[in-house]
Amino acid sequence: MDPRGTGAPIGPRVVVVTRPSELELLIAHHGTKEQARFVLRQRGQELGPVEAAHRALDEAARTVLGALPLSYRRARVGRQDLPRFLFEPADVIVAVGQDGLVANVAKYLDGQPVIAVCPSTPGVLARTGAAAFADQLADVLAARARIEERTMVEARLDDGQVLRSLNEIFVGHRSHQSARYELWSPDAARHERQSSSGVVFASGTGATGWAASIARQSREAPALPQPTEPHLVYLVREAWPSPSTGTSLVAGAVQATQRVALVSEMNEGGVVFGDGMESDRLTLGWGQRVEVGPSTRRLRLAA
Image (cartoon, rainbow, N blue to C red; front, side, top):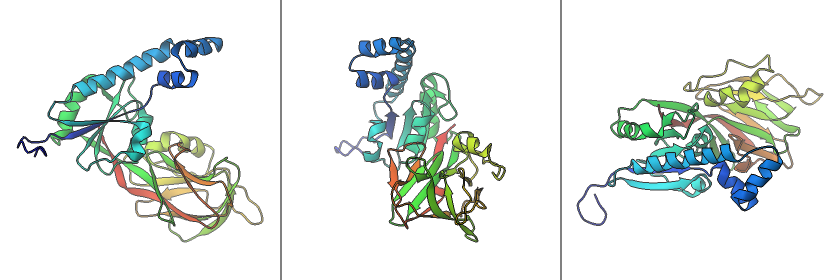
């Protein structure tokens, strides 16, 4: 009911998530739009396509907000504010942008449905056009929308810190130089000291990106999962054999109930980050243990 005591029912809360457009980022960097235009022209490029993408994003966001009934509660959140925003269990999330924005918001959710609105060309995740948003929202609220449950990756450090990611999690050195650690197999039956360029743990959603590139160069790589399959794969990048390090545990599947344990032998520079967001990382010190596997949380994407 309405907390003001009017007795009127409260509508659902719809949280609209956006990110700055490339035009806004260019203006923030160069000071003005004309200065950004000048710099791009010096590089043989034009600002026109960037302006067009900005207009498409702005129009999509306005269309989404304009489609919300007045009885609905609403919130608009920028990507940069996601770590500080408090989502409610009954929220409906609307990500207006490209696929990367869906991955950005997914790690902060716990079962809330997501409608991914594409401003222009549909992506793998952002497939709903702004014009179709109102119907999609009605279907979600009426529980008649088809929901894809996509597996996420979860890393847990021995000090209690947790990081979740939609596509993949990287464990290694922040500069991508040689990382030293001890790795346990998913069934915990074997372990091996390794020196490598790091380990990537990928979900089915991330299987077409970084993981696919690594798998193409590895004869040991298992079949990569599909987006809604519950398991992950782990792929060791450029493992280096030596008298003290091995290369027998370089790839494999991680089933829904399994975890891959890794103990760092890096005095400094050890990191854990997800979806390429190196700025949002956990630090992995010498002797620290991290366990990585499928998360019990899923991205619930309205398809």
